[in-house]
Image 1: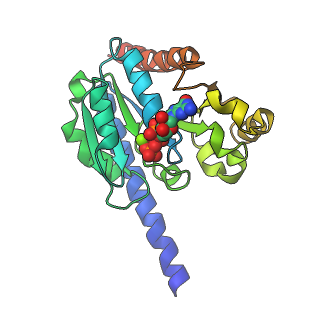
Image 2 (image 1 turned 120 degrees about the vertical axis):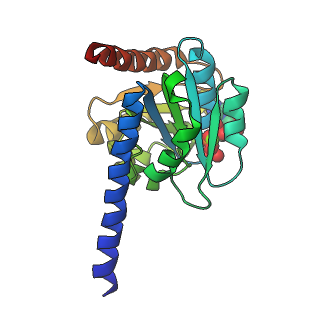
Length: 228
Ligand SMILES: Nc1nc2c(ncn2[C@@H]2O[C@H](COP(=O)(O)OP(=O)(O)OP(=O)(O)O)[C@@H](O)[C@H]2O)c(=O)[nH]1
Ligand SMILES: [Mg+2]
């Protein structure tokens, strides 16, 4: 019967993904590389936030970018223009990165000389939430024009991340964005979640985000040092 066959296949795919995600994590840990996965809807500002973050932190940490897109190298080219090595994954139509794609891309990354691996996932609020990549930190970038109801409509994504960046706050005067409603939605799904309202365009609010991310990378490196 179609339904009884479909469910096990999907379960197997997800299980295989999780196993490879663990192997990705082991490889990153072996090289003491902190992995960050940025997820968001199309156009929320993933690349713009990443580029501004990279420009601010690249003298402090050795960074490498992996960009996932259905087609083109536009975003990986933007990473490279920001001054870091960049690898493009074209998913050929798939609406998310998965652990296999990242696993296959990792040999192109000089992990020995990378403190933090920055991954931009495919623009989508649904599929990436089901495919862990093996990173240490998952960040969701929401944006003001998307509307304040998104935590309620895409709960799996909001539940599975360790931080939410609310981008495009420079547009707050022009949109009917109910900040309290948004915050309540996030808090109900993921209590105490780190939250950074900012504008990647003007830089407003960016310092708090950079300070927090720096702390995460440094805490990871310190733990690793202690394990040696
Ligand atoms: N006003 C404003 N525009 C922004 C901000 N951040 C990004 N944008 C604009 O939003 C558009 C999309 O930005 P990208 O960074 O390409 O978004 P993305 O999420 O990487 O898009 P995809 O990779 O295609 O899913 C561009 O026109 C950016 O200039 C911001 O803080 N404020
Ligand atoms: Mg992008």
